[in-house]
Amino acid sequence: MKSAEFKSYLSRAVDLIGEWEGSYGDFRRHPSLEIEPAELSAALGEYATRLKDNYPFFHPRYAGQMLKPPHPAAVIGYLAAMLINPNNHALDGGPATGQMEKEVVSDLSKMFHIPDPSLGHLTSSGTIANLEALWVARSIHPYKAVAFSEDAHYTHSRMSEVLGLPTVQIPTDEFGRLRVDILEEKIKEGNIGTVVATAGTTGLGVVDPISDILALRSRYDFRVHIDAAYGGFFSLLAWGNNEIMTGDTVRHLRGIGACDSVAVDPHKHGLQPYGCGCIIFRDPEVGKFYRHDSPYTYFTSEELHLGEISLECSRAGAAAGALWLTLKLLPLEAESGLGAILSATIRAARKWSALIEASEAFKLYIHPELDILTFYPAAEHNSASEIDRKSQGLFRQAMESVDDPVFLSVLRVSSRNMEWRVPNFISDQAQVRILRSVLMKPEHEDYVPHLHGRLLELV
Ligand SMILES: *Cc1c(COP(=O)(O)O)cnc(C)c1O
Image (cartoon, rainbow, N blue to C red; front, side, top):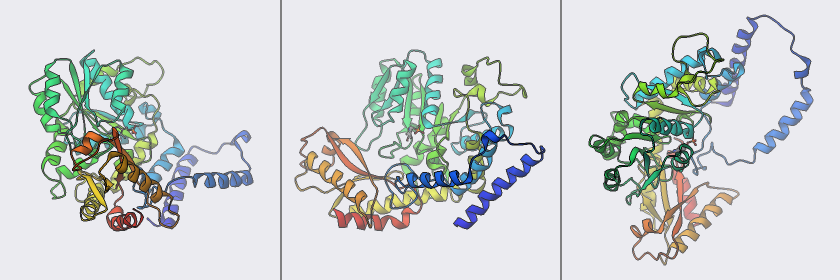
């Protein structure tokens, strides 16, 4: 969207809300709220200067962490609702955005092919969404352990600690996937109540073997929670009629619909500003664990309020409004809408991985399953310390370049993992930093040759 067009929609959003406000009649604004235009102007100038201390998340030369600006439609939607500032804690905190929240959560539930009726709501983050899943799991399997892979997000061990639940860490295979054979051995020992599988690990973007874990669930009694905070939206492609995703990735992403709960972050791949996670439970009965008897919040409806099925109290109605408006324009479809954006990010990762495989200077760490690429500079002596030093050096040099910077991230992997890959590997330290690139913008597809060329110049 061009800047002039964007500005006109922002100003239209302000006008539309102003018109609605006007319908309630005039009143005198309190003088204590007034500010001097000159002071605002000066403060805004200072603010803008300070905001320049940022990395260019919007630009394809930024290919580091999971960061990008929201879609303009989300900004327009957020702004309009924020002017009203509804609170989706309860329907009377914001009837319109409360209804929109139900609609978008139902859309997300359909994206995963979770059968109706399910139970879900937006959260302020993936962390809270995962916490709620583990909290419900604790109510169903009190005192039993939570199992997750060594590559699972650190939030699972931390939230298990908050909940007082024991944890079991399951090793990964050389491709970064949870080892189902070891999981089964641990389950046989008898104390595992919940298995967390990740759809799109934060480090490598790998999908755990969800369908194989579900096959185990039919033989043992445990819950399966999917942490799809990052990769959940790629389910669209797994259910679509396209060639972009194949084999095990499709099989495992399609398994999500049969799991007990799933967490997904619209503020990662759903084009939203921060403050938008989501938790969905397959069985709506779990709503009973949320029951509380707050005397002050509800009065307009007999229905279950969003605040009655959420651990958080106040939540931005604007987050639901922004997602609703975005999905109107870029719906959850495989071939168009959000699917077309996600396909481009996957193609970008594959394009760059092909360039890396054809080059002498870099080696691929694993083939990208989604849109996260991991690689490292080729080393003369194949030692952990040398690969680590070269990766870290290139990372800094690329970022600090003045005329043509490239922003990557570094990932720490174990030397054990490098031994599987590097012939005659010298394991002179326990961990190795390698390079990692999250290619989450569709523009990366065109820009990847430039990123690769620039790194070749610098290495
Ligand atoms: C980002 C992420 C989280 C944490 O979500 P927040 O929204 O940052 O709180 C959890 N799990 C995975 C797999 C993630 O990628």
